Image (cartoon, rainbow, N blue to C red; front, side, top):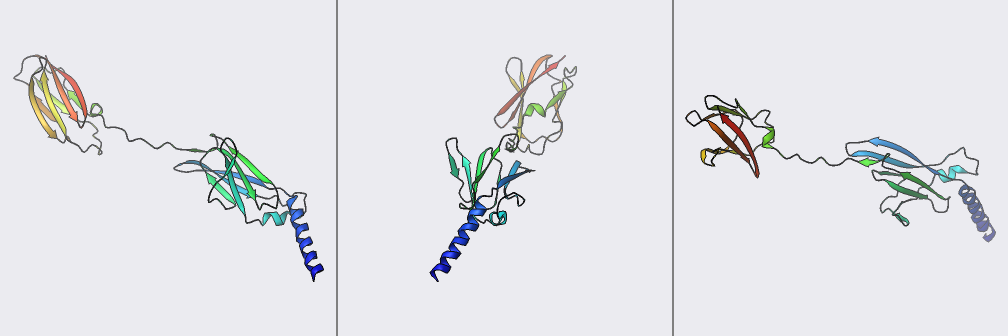
Length: 211
């Protein structure tokens, strides 16, 4: 019985040793996603390689993935599958079934993988929305227009007309603008005036002239 057990042990050891002479590699594929470009590193055994019993190595179910931190390879927690998906650059290493072969290493550069930068919400600029016409005006009648007003602009605007001497001659507070606003300065003297438009913390000054 003892000899039988020893024979089985020797047989298994021989099989694992033969399989250990085989090698494995990493197959790399790429996929474009909404987040960027990710790589999939997959455990691969070439069954046609000239070594004994590559099929044993191909049946491996134990995987450890590592990433190099600049000093050494560090185990990636939770990654125990036969493949690894990542958007990150770096040097990766796979050890498959510790006693069935060596390891496989792959390098991913910024040309191979990347993550898209999150789009920053553009700050609404009143200068991009408001125009005034005609300017100059011979009769003192102006039209303040918010062209192509975006639906994201939900706050109200405050409008103030100021003379060249700094006097406020017209004020309209907290008005949502969705259509043209008529500004009647027909009774004012000819010269330079300013329209101050306030939107939140943003202030836009526009010059108008009564000719």
